[in-house]
Length: 428
Image (cartoon, rainbow, N blue to C red; front, side, top):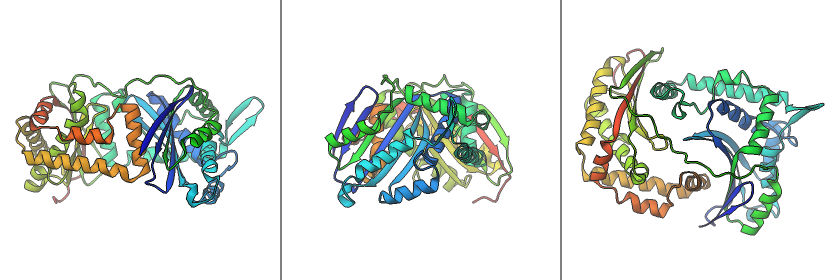
């Protein structure tokens, strides 16, 4: 696998040449500093652009064209990465070695059309998105926002983060907000779209068995509409406010069978090694699987939860513990969770726990090599987060010691306790 980064006036082009796959994947990322009101706009833009183009003004016509391009697959997504909001468009298609000459160019042109040739309406000096497609994209996003509110797991996680640090980067919901959606129309959405082309930081990733010179030329020809001046990017990482000395407890009620307990821990300033490697080992030992301390103690030995896990968020310097419990078991479950977190500080785990965590982490990294999208995420992490390459990651994860985990444990502090109370159910 060979990697090359080519910087131009308007964007960075990242070429990952490999013969491992029969397909080629092109990913175009637009990113800007995170602003709460922008989130809903950017989700709407993704929906709009993936719904139609000027050449293919309906989803049906777009589907027909993807079939003509030998079942090209495309998608768009908007997501939060620490302090940044990233809008991502991606197309995967067969290498023309398995189709016919010229299909690479045609496939990249189709992706370019999705981004730069939207289905618009002109009325004198007013330009706006197609009203018909706007309504479809609007309703799709509205349904997505509502569905997240109706999902107890997602809702409880989001609410805990909002309670932990209101109006912070960490508290923002990636899907957007209904109150912001109501203010969007086809005209102001198009103006926002134009601002993306003028001011976002743009990175283009290409992976597959491609000719570097040719792919550079094809990208140049199809991405002339990017007229932003390439700006340096700040760090994506967030430093949270100081943790509460006495954790805040917040409860809400909902008509659900299973109560959702979410604990938010803030982590004091970590070294780069702790943030990228030790934290993953810590989280796995504490609550990363059926061998974890939380699973064995809270679920197996005491039957106090339906599920329990810990999730590290290194970008936010936060650790979450999530559990599905009966409402009446709240205090017992919370006590046992606190005890296991305390045991981690005391070093009450074994070298075998460390070894299992390392093996799991390394195996998950190896799986990244099995798909183009995963490899693109890896290289995006190298570009945006200054992550190490795979070889360095393998080497550094193996250097994590028990003392490293204990030292990190002392930096992890319970800040917020959130309970979405449901109705008691029979224990499993």
